[in-house]
Amino acid sequence: MNKPVTPKYMVVHDEILKRLKSNHYSVGTRLPSEESLAGTFKVSRVTIRKSLEMLVDAGYLASRQGSGYHVNCLSPQRETCLASFTDAVLRKGRVPGAKLIGIDVPHPDPPEDVTEVFDAPVARIHRLRTVDGEPELLVSTWVPTNLVTGLAPDAFPEFGPGQSILRILSDRFNLAWSRACETVRPCAAPNEVAEHLGIEPGTPILSVACTAYDDTDLPVFHDQLFRATPIVFNLSRSARKTDPI
Amino acid sequence: MNKPVTPKYMVVHDEILKRLKSNHYSVGTRLPSEESLAGTFKVSRVTIRKSLEMLVDAGYLASRQGSGYHVNCLSPQRETCLASFTDAVLRKGRVPGAKLIGIDVPHPDPPEDVTEVFDAPVARIHRLRTVDGEPELLVSTWVPTNLVTGLAPDAFPEFGPGQSILRILSDRFNLAWSRACETVRPCAAPNEVAEHLGIEPGTPILSVACTAYDDTDLPVFHDQLFRATPIVFNLSRSARKTDPI
DNA sequence: ATAATCAATCTGTATCTACTAATCTTTTCC
DNA sequence: GGAAAAGATTAGTAGATACAGATTGATTAT
Image (cartoon, rainbow over all chains, first blue to last red; front, side, top):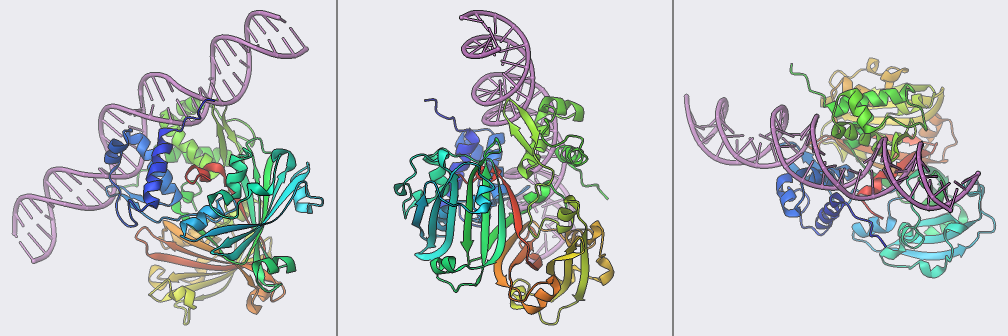
């Protein structure tokens, strides 16, 4: 049992993020200087810089030379399949829920877009995600059965942070992904979907498909979801650092 | 006229990216080691690391401790408003086009979602973007008139790299943004939009709105576009560095 | 031949140092 | 009082160095 050593910059990063979220530093204010933070966390300036840079990239902080690090916003979350829905909702101060509709291990007749990705038999976890009790997303998660032996309904709590499918796959089944491809499509709400989301059948909604791969490029899981609500992205200029317009 | 000094890591980054695009290093192969690259570019390992890290974050490269940097893919771009549509299409080996539908300086009656963002009078550039001649996006770009003095149709070529609105705003009008917010909504294609895109009115399509701000948080431009085709994102694990699941 | 072991290679983490450049604050001068 | 100049503060860039940890490939033993 050798503990996976957490790098200092990660520890510091997590601590600063925790402080941000608990309003220890509030939006608009300035953080202490790099030098000062390096002192309080007992690390070098290079290390504290790495932590702060991550927070800048993520959109929490903005840095200005000569001025300092300013608190930008507290929920720069991008709403992709691979960012926890649970956490995103919690961050907004709302209550996420997850109603388990069904588990099929293995699923008898997966659709074509799933069989295209996986050769092996797959399990389906079918859930309705809610915000403050109102239906928000209808999600099917597909995973190869051999990666989730012992999958059972009790693995999927309806409430609390543990409802995050990403956390479940990561913690309980040790699934890790390194890259993913996500597609957002427009579609007319099918009857079954409309019923779950409480909308008129045929209403234009978003259909999102996401496939995640591990570092050997093997598919780990496939998410398929429907939502009537918009997806919001917060972008920061950091993207342009690599791809100049 | 003091030249804006380009940092070494940026120069090196651009050079490696150029080599990647020109197939100097091809997909799947391994790059020379950090030490070796540091030697060829005559910089320290710290500097070369910064350049490589940027390319990893952008998705071009993947690094594995003990193994090295491997070429991942050559077009990891995300399809957001702020990533050049022109460049994305060109990268796929297709031909982008831009048919100018109209320019209004100022626009007599901007919609509410635009007036909400800008206090001042705004200009509208209305264009139909095509791929291999087929209509793909219908886009309206809104900019405060005072930021684009002398705006005229001749600024918008129908073909070539110069059709990129981002390039035009950046090069000709010196507009720079530092952060942006993008929203993807489902909607039924309005008549006028359906006509331009060559689809049935009422078909479910995507409506994307994007507002870009400069570093003083003033809105710089607002994009509003319709598309019937899906949006694809390629995500890499780097996102999780900040927001653990 | 196969498997285990070891050594070399290469990235990951971390520190110290030095200097530059933008910003902010204080002082000075008119 | 207000503007300009000087100084202090702060992030940005860049280097040298050291060691840890993962991977790879060669060597050795079975």
